[in-house]
Image 1 (spheres, rainbow, N blue to C red):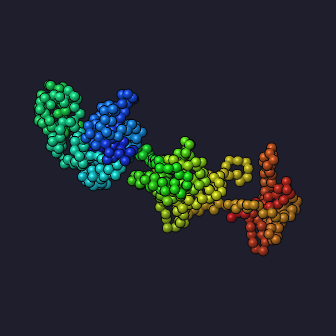
Image 2: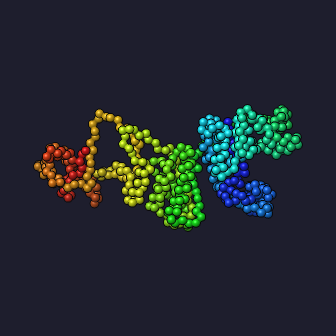
Image 3: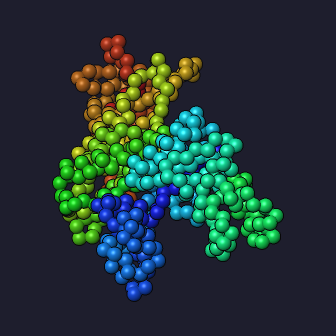
Length: 494
């Protein structure tokens, strides 16, 4: 089964989409270079005043209609909106080359999602009309029958199985791709409909028109086969929202109202594909021609408008634009939503969206390079690390293990100064927080040093010791700094 979506007069509809105030007024779209400008498209109101495609611009202006310059970028935007809508209804689609804006969808097996063919066609047309287009939708078992019905009938047309010939037979010959000489020939023969053409003998048509006659006869009978060439169902290309502001905006709170509407529109698109927003780029066109761009990348893909809006607000507050804002553009990248199966015996993790907002607030207060997840770096300096973007790990089940529990050193920052008694250059007693500890075991010294070529030169001698006092045992690492002649506790082993 094929469903064909055809927006009549696509170029005029694309122009009306960019200029909604002209929808109910006569207007024409002209193209070409002066003085050879010609009418490229016109809406129905302009055609009723005598405007025709191909006439000169001066002739069209004499009909008292609004003239618009053709906007190819606007046509591409309109095409992208239609492409985004049809991607929701079928993974296999084809763009009909000789009919602008027309899509053919393979809807075999889609009844489990959208209902029968009539329900799917109605939902498809309703979605297209909600986006600002007038469109015809036809469903048939033959590709060309569905295409001809979409071009020749208004609204929704559904052909029952086995009735393709009867459905196309009532249509005029203008729905077929006729060459001018063939149209003149059929007019001279008195052939007006596809049914009359199908009633002719195929051999007679071939003898008079050649192989073109055989193809036209098969089209009129609804039996011409078609090899579908599906397009790549691109989704990311449609994740863009643009808006020009009526007046310059220099207040972030007023800008957030616009960003909220645009973010909601983007989330509606990604939710329709069971996806989430992985990153969103904010592009602000400023007064004077400058551009202010910021990239907001949550740690996990989000489907929550308030959270995304709060992240953009905090980022713009930390990096405000330098001038008033004239236009806003949001570019999003989608990803599968984050899902985690929590077990009964796993600790409850914080909500990813709330955690992301908290990290953004801390980043605004403390700076970009002071908030994140610490990562060790391959460096000779002790405890050398860098701050990486915060990425919460996925919850995982902890299996019981018979392996010994690894020992971790809890580092003291800053180190705690202590007094140490030495015997034969080995520590035997430690005075720490007014408590005298006896060293039962000691391993060391481990001599460490570095950066002797710089003012930040450092060196120390480390000892791992087992302390005992009044029945209390502690396993620590102590160190001696020869530069300051000072002993200190570097950390405690858990």
